Length: 346
Image (cartoon, rainbow, N blue to C red; front, side):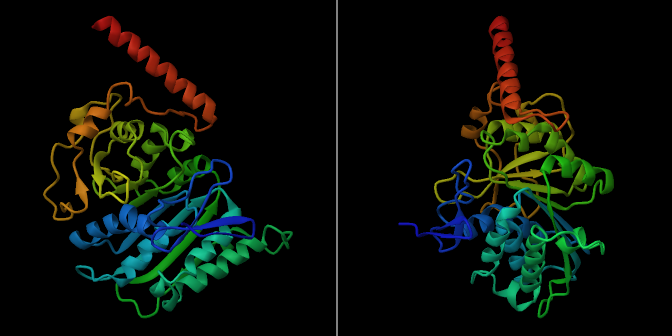
């Protein structure tokens, strides 16, 4: 039975691998798979991303965008794995991470995540203490008036030269407590074609469709480096995978965890299209050794059968302003119209 304990208004649950997670107060959804919060971040995000870094020439400047940062597992696990790795060629000079999270009340949970024993290198390198201190300062800003000395947004950033680590020379970490949709517009204006990796980890599409729209994925496509940028997410929903394909990604499945069927890898190497067609999805894995049979898979017949025209209708939010009910209603209307047209043509 999972151990449950409450601290600072947050309810912590022990998952199958001993790491902790939370139950969302609004939706009741767990933040992570019951098989293990740390393990989920490892399987869905860290290990697939590391597979590419091991197989390809690592860039001197590696940039990660972590969306819906939550408790921080995806980024923290990726950094831990990276700092322990032996990579081909020279070390990464700078790892730049930008995290986006709306809920500032999760800061205590982020700190508790870092305090767990699964992050020994983060602690010994000096990065974990630096991030914890930055998060505590950020939390204090909520209860203190601005002192007029210009302190504020810069306190949500930290730059560390990790000690005892050979794979990465410097780590720049920034967290923005902001609505994803507001943040993305600014990122697109400032940093087009900047990121190597995107970790996309909101709650489920049915609960928060506003974070799973074709419009958001199209922005990611512009933010990611052409041909080599990669997006990872746990979702396998038809509306999500079809939207990624329409936005110009090649779509694959990643390794399964527990009872789940695996997550989704999207590579920024396809062309944007107004229409979703099954032939837009790759029929085979590229020749790169990164696409191992243990980590990456083309969509199988069962998955393709689920991508019916109706299921493949994406969530849409052209102005990045619609509420949940409007997005769901508009998709339902689009599905109904599609069904009518299909019936008329049959």
